[in-house]
Length: 578
Image 1 (cartoon, rainbow, N blue to C red):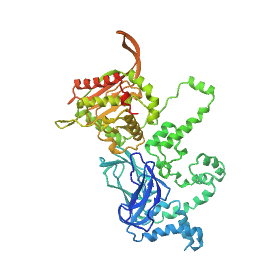
Image 2: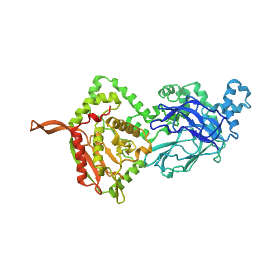
Image 3: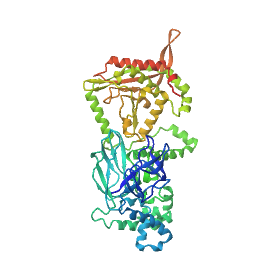
Image 4: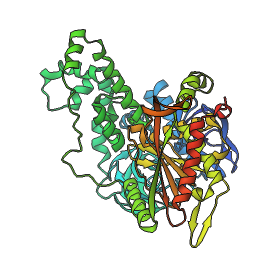
């Protein structure tokens, strides 16, 4: 049985790598931990070692090819029978180019030619099935729930092609196929929860299922049309719609031009819909993007969030050239009401939504929660921010919002009043030695709270960088599970959506959460030369929800008073950090 060599995770923000050089070739004997190949990413260049000792049976990714983390790079086995099977596929193309007449039988030439588009089926050609197992998804993740199968039994799959969607209490992700072949058996049904390492499915050459020996024959009869169709670009569109008469072949040409997606990848164009996750499909509906017109940049042509956003931007740029009268007319008319596609439907809760619901209910039942609110004059902070934000962005590359100011004021107050940063364990109160600040991030999948570890040692520039990075990777579903764990206190910026304040729920095991309202300008009373005067000021409401089992109202008031005093003094010049 062969072992797959996969591209490992090479850093928090690294999602893909390029093979720069193979240090070993097919047939070479390698030792465990011996360097196999060199990989280059946008962060590092490194060697990938062999996970086991054995013989290289197959190289699946050639030099200068770029693949995603988790992709299968090569196969290593004991070498028994592998050399001849590996030599044959590599020798066949060479023989066909130079001496096609030397083939043993003409009937074998056609399958050899067809193997080119489906070259990834080689790993499963041995007839042995390979189990697809639930991989490790983080140190604290022990199980996952199958939310949706993207393939059905009998479907052909390519290496690294998404097979199913898995949901955990931290992240939702797709599980790719480790090999190419036919999905022979699904072992875990949708909505079932299994432990890490459990077998999810079996993939083989397609010969294992009963009454399937003739299945390759129809496929072989259908695919010879593909090479012929590639000689005439208009033909693929016509063949995809066999019901159309011959007279419709001419109108089919504009249709083909509308979808430049399908030249060489025409064989997979029908599968593009299977590459679209529910999140991307929902985003496309919100943006008004037709997925059939989008060219996917993911593995196997899978459409990603970035592809949808790019298509939406392209669509917006077209009406930008509209005439002034049309713009005036649209300004006079009320904007059309956006109707959600969810209206009138019933949807099953996602795994993440179920977890959020369970945690919220458990928190409210296990703790005694109340909220204290203060109003803070942040006029001086707003002035400082306006004065330095241009230089700040130029030197750090990050925009300067109010959030880092609120964060540093809260962190300092937590150091003075650690009861707000504490946790309850049985009949004991635990006071952490550091302030790990969770930042609530609104995503398409639900509310997630990535954590800034040891935030008490960071300045405003460092906090702004980490907040922006964590928020972006959370929304792009590129967060590591461990980055969602370990928070001791949470900041939730509901003011970013215009809310004045709310009463946020404390999520266990934390004891408090600070809600940040919208910064608004309004008249305020100030002292001028010892006399009261009315001036336009900037104000914000800060709402602290806390567990009354261990935190008293006086504790909350002292904490909020410290935050208020720090923000109203606005002496942050020494904390900017740039």
